Image 1: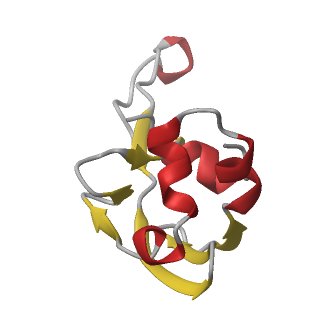
Image 2: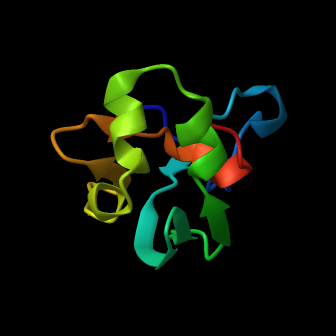
Length: 107
């Protein structure tokens, strides 16, 4: 799955000719740390960088023509999500979203 990566500060990599050296970019994987079901298709998602977003999945579910995705219009089925390795998933990955898209509000 896609994950949002953001640069972290790097430490000193040497004392001579530092200005001419290429510094590697270290990254931290952005994960969902908590997901709370608020109402029918709305979830509050907490991310590992401390950001929180409330996302309403109803427009996405209603717009989909895929019957496997539309099956989650059943509020009971939609409510059976879980976090796995920092990702939001339902059932056997029948419904999952890239964390970067959830973080940016695109899905």
